[in-house]
Image (cartoon, rainbow, N blue to C red):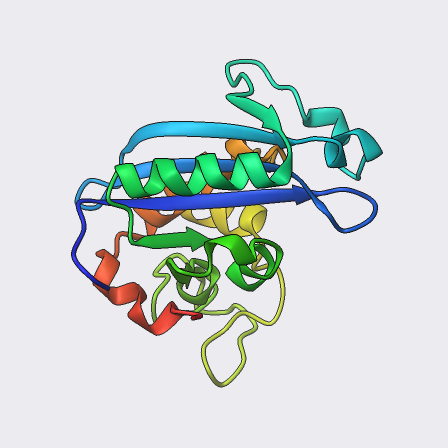
Length: 189
């Protein structure tokens, strides 16, 4: 991964028509994996169509930073990342987010799940866990079960709000404990 002092963790939520309706992003320090800023975007009119997680579009402690057209939102998001010298975008199951955000294809994308779901990268995977020969868990490797495993908090529930989930995915990376260069094997573009 090219050297930068910051990276981004991104999460999207889609509506019933598989259109992005919200985007959450956390800019993080590359060494400490601590957030230095968050942004929460709603895409209008897509968010008005509703989706599986429309009930958590608004959550306490996270106000919407921008609600606008997809074009305006994507321009603001890309400009903000460039201003922070972000080169890499990380996402859990990154192919989904990457496929829904072609406007951000000039950034390097990495899949957090590529490390989190594999025994050789996730020391919290129990010895008796059912894994493929590659070391990947055969089941229960979504954000929620992996966060429960790494944090030891069986009560953790994924919110399915884009900004809350991006924050949790950054915490998941911090708990995995790998420096960014280890994610080279998780590059998707």
